[in-house]
Image 1 (cartoon, helix red, strand yellow):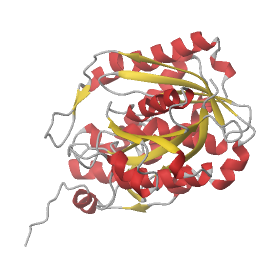
Image 2 (image 1 turned 180 degrees about the vertical axis):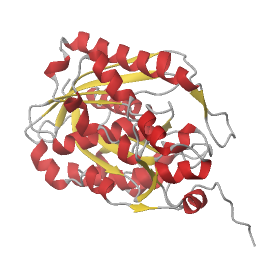
Image 3 (image 1 turned 90 degrees about the vertical axis):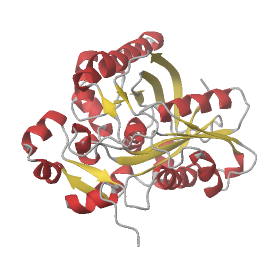
Length: 351
């Protein structure tokens, strides 16, 4: 496609809360929850961290890796379902913070957990058509889960940003193909003004997640005339630790192809950041000439699939990057009371 990634960056907050700590408050069986969700702990944003700060940090890492002039970025799209403002774009904050303003287009995207990959596709089109030299697409969230709900064990924070370009000497992973699979399947939603989302329980697995992820992945394998064994790494959206493994098995992928990008057991579901962070983690360890398949998922519902091939430029870029695992291994645990205060579940009285 002559379009690829020239730089990427990520950010995950340092705070964590263990599944046992949440279960203790609600009198739940922590071991059963951990087995059922395939999760041990999740990341928690501090009170001064939000989608904007996460995206800015990730974008700065991406710029440092790409070694490009931010003034050459002609488009910025930030995907999230927890933008800090209902009316005021996150994308302009990121653009200003990295020095990309004013000659660019910018917008916020929302499609549950796949808004970030939708931004990647938009940037691919703009770059390939020569409308912009580089495009920046990010996916980040400080996701919400109602107290006591199953989502409280997984809803976490983090994100990643990718800079898309056409300059062959800078591309570290070239896109071979992308396509999408979209339907109106209302498995998960949050009304305007509601503090927490609602979900359809088991309905969120089938016909929501599995139908879209599996169908989209099958389609891109068909279009690219590839099979699961042709890929070194595969990343699926990871709302919990079980769904991507089940989808992978159904499609014919082996656990070792999924392992490098499977981050949810240690940091939870970062929503719009989930598949983006998974791809960033894979690129941290990938070698030149390897094939990568990514399929995101967003409730509502839809999936985006990508086939990428890494280039000889990747090892040099890896040395300029800040690995995702550095953020995952940097952690400080919270008790439930502090976690609740951080997340606004306990509101301090105003004096």
